[in-house]
Image 1 (cartoon, rainbow, N blue to C red):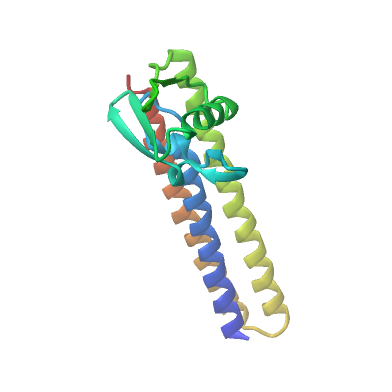
Image 2 (cartoon, rainbow, N blue to C red; image 1 turned 90 degrees about the vertical axis):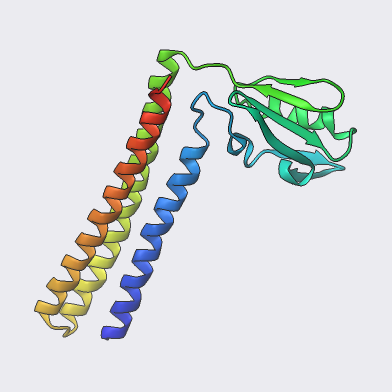
Length: 187
């Protein structure tokens, strides 16, 4: 009985860690006015009829603080990559010179910065909701075990352990959101 509970708690910690990892990925997608190749993560290009990640058909790099460069392995892919960028509606315009695609990242307006900060906060709240859902499930499992004969004082210790885990993960989320907001609001 105790082993099952320990496994459930370990699984809950993994789920909480996963929520934080997911938040980190989501935050990298939020533009900060600086060029970042992660803005193009998840962009799929039609490669001979197959949707293929951009990184598998081109070399994606940073030329300077505000410019992303995309050099396809095959020149025939230039137009398809351009179409994919337009289709993804990222709010950026690719410039194709026949050899390479350059994307200039425009500076953000104050209003846009505030919107992006709100978007980052919303992502943080989603992550916290995910943490609370995990906590709720494991607390239900602990209560069920106590009802089935697990010592009540041990159950209370496990609940305290879960609450501490939730608090630690929640603090990490707050730190990530604070850092992202600071990054977004820095001109």
